[in-house]
Amino acid sequence: MTGYLAPIRINGAGPTGSLLAFGLANFGYSIHLFDPLSADQICSRSRAYALTQSSRRFLTRLGLWDELLPYLSPFKTLSLEDRGIDQSVNFTELDLHSANRPSQSVGWILDHCALMKLLMSHLESSNNVKLFLGEAANQSAFFSHDFGLVIAADGPRSPTRTQFRLPWWSHSYAQGCLTAKVRFRDIDSEKAFECFRPEGPLAILPLGNNDFQVVWSAPFDRCRQLAGLDTSAFLDELCTILPHGLEPDSLLDSPAAFPLEISFAPKLHRDNVVLVGESGHRCHPVGGQGLNLCWRDTETLLQLMTSASCVRRGLKAVPGNYTRLRFFDLITVGLATDLLVRLFSNRQSALLIVRRLGLFMLKHSPLFRRVSLQAMSDGPSTLLHNLPN
Ligand SMILES: Cc1cc2nc3c(=O)[nH]c(=O)nc-3n(C[C@H](O)[C@H](O)[C@H](O)COP(=O)(O)OP(=O)(O)OC[C@H]3O[C@@H](n4cnc5c(N)ncnc54)[C@H](O)[C@@H]3O)c2cc1C
Image (cartoon, rainbow, N blue to C red; front, side, top):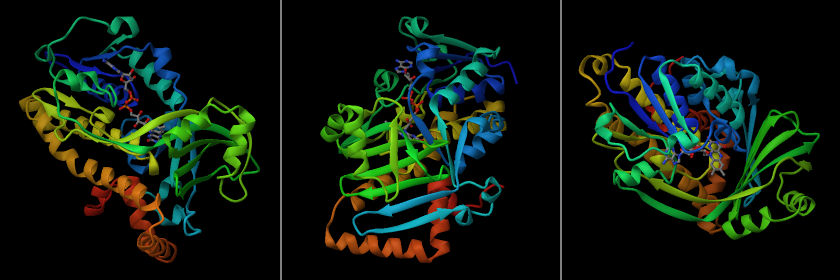
């Protein structure tokens, strides 16, 4: 499809902005993609993403899933452990919704570099995409009416959101988060772990072979102190919190500490400016929801911009419809992650009873496990509809 007069401006070429640029360019939109970082800098972040079934379905629709397969580390078991009450439960393929069973995995881990290199190579070779990266992005101020839409995908500190004065609500957690890539000895490379500990959740996500991404939540000062330790002292500290039987062998990158917050833009648009990904919301990394939620924004916006009514009537109704359609998913996932952190990061006896009951139900009810996994993996809003096959 061709013939849109004004190009679409996307600010931010992270995983959200780049994937949206790819999808829109394939449909014939003319895209101007801006990022103050160079392509090499964009691709070189040391991070791994836990992908859920909603992301698998979206990437498959975009034709990218097969290309990403060599870089995906599937996990067939997710072990959820509550250290406070010393109980654990495993989610396996058998707990997947029937529409997700053929994928044969509970989830996948994808390295940021592999993802971004693939997206960048597609964008660089597309006739519909003009890249303004690094120095080239430092152009003078722009006017939103020069573009069909201005899409802010410029992350949680979004300069575009500030420029167009979109409201933003934010609450900082006392917890921070430390990420590190670690090699383990004699470990099941198809198992992921989410451990709820009183100081915060700990995720251990398989990257292939014996390598894992550790996402360790704890008071922010402690995260910073841990990030400053030398390798052997860091591995010693890690040993003290790992699930039974896990033994670290070596550290593969430099641990980095991040502050954590829950943030939300109550309105995701103003005129023709739209917020997607972390420019519009941010939540605690517990459950690895972050990027999956950003890509559900991308999918909704793409569906609206490629719908028959948009093709007939233009982009005018898209921003308002986008805000309306994304509200439920963003609110429920934000609140659910917040609730999980609060519920599991304290030792009040009434809450310990709730946790015991929750873990008991998960352990003994396959239906409860299937519904919980679907909410985590496809988004809570899918519980109200049928899942597409
Ligand atoms: C410690 C940690 C662990 C995480 N683990 C997971 C996980 O396991 N699974 C998961 O799904 N998610 C995870 N996340 C969340 C995930 O990293 C984010 O959801 C994801 O990076 C959001 O992508 P984005 O493209 O919206 O924003 P970003 O990745 O922040 O990209 C924003 C882009 O905008 C660019 N930019 C900045 N200013 C401008 C400007 N003025 N103009 C144009 N461009 C600009 C930046 O250079 C950047 O390239 C984690 C986050 C953290 C902090």
